Every structure is written in C-alpha cells, then in structure tokens.
Image 1 (cartoon, rainbow, N blue to C red):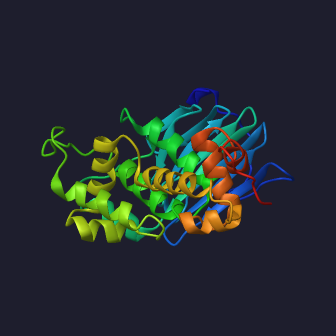
Image 2 (image 1 turned 180 degrees about the vertical axis):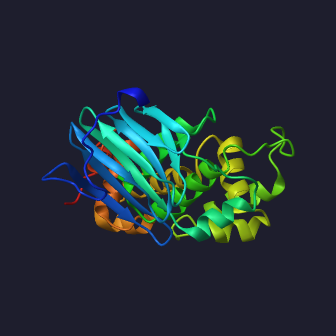
Length: 284
C-alpha cells in the first residue's frame, strides 16, 4: 500500500483492540530481546515511537509503514531498521507476522566502532540482509546456549551492513581466524561468547563474525553445532550411554536441544541413527 492509500481512523498509539496484536513467541538473552508478533488484518497503528532502535524481519504478510521520510511497502523476507525515537505509523491489510528485535545501546555503540550504522527508517538495502534475516529466524527457533552469541553477531553484521569493506581480503584465511576456529574446536562443549572470541583474535566482534562466515561458509554457532553433532555420532554407537548422557557429553544443554540439532543436521533423530549402527542394541 502506498502512502496516498493510508486509511483514516487510525487508533491511538499503543492501543491494540482485542487480539489485534499477539506475541507468539519470545527470546531474551543477555544482549537482546526478540519477539515473534502477529498483527491482525485491518489493524491501524497511529504515529508513535520506541525508546530503542529496532530491527524488524517480516516473516509473512505485506503491510505499510509511514515515517519521517514518507511511506514504504513492507514485504515478507525483508529486514527493516527503525531508529530510536523515530515517529512511525503502520497499517496491516492482512495478517502479518514479524520478528521484532530491540537493540540495546551498548550493542549499537559497539557497531559504531566499525563505521556508520543505518540512520533512517527503511528496508536494509545490502545484498545479504535478507539471508541474515533468515539466519536470525533460524537462531530464534533454536534457543540453545549458542543462540545468544549467534544473534549478537548477526545483529552486529546487520548494523554494519552498509560499511565499506575495502580493507578486507577474500583470499587466504588469516591466521587469527584459524586461531578462532581452533579454539572453538578445542572448547566445543563450552559456551564461548563473541567477546571472548574477539579477544582471542585481537579483532572487533563484527569482523570475527563476518570473516568467519565468509571464509568457512557457516556462522560460528552453526560450526559449533556441527562439531557437537559429530561428537555425538562418535558416542552414539556406545551401548553403555543413554541419549541424555550422549547429549551432555557432546556439549548440548539437554536431550531436547540435542535431538533438534541432530535431526536438523543429519535428517534423522539420534535414536534412529543409533539403531542403524552395526551390532548396537539401543538403550531407552
């Protein structure tokens, strides 16, 4: 919907009649808060502002957003930035689901160390923004001990997605990055924060997160989950270990997180993988 088509009779700020806005799921880490929100068809939100900057990843349902620069169509699969204190208004012609991410000031200040961050409302135009939004949703669904640092890294990359990277090379993998990967391998059952990895590398957290994905083809959290699943595949044929014991020995917080990660990476649940091993009689 274009700006000229914005409907009249918009409700007062902060007013959500009945079930017009529902929080379907949420995640709160030490650094950020994320909510999956569903907006009802026909909901109109009058001009209002938020104290913190936000990212909005639109899961489904196109809608319209008006702000100081005009009005935009907001389409599924896109990531939008909303500065702190920016007056805006919304109209949802159909049911819409979004991931809303509050950005605390320390995270924004950390991103500014790498260069300019978005200064105006609107869709992020960088080529990788949509893929980063999809990764953000994936991490939101995972909810394990790796989710916090993974989300922090993704948000830092999104905040600095418009910064030019002329000083970075895409050739040989730098030694400091190999050190980071080696530390992740050695301590794969531990919870390592992005700040710890940055200190190990002697690099900014944004650079660690971005360069790791660029050189190794996966995020830091994805790499650690792969290591943990590989460890589990070595332990599963052991008849003396229960699935819960395998999960803990592989670095997973519990059997549920272990099962979900194992199925996603291998295509089968761990108990079925165990049954396929020659001569193995699985325990409950």
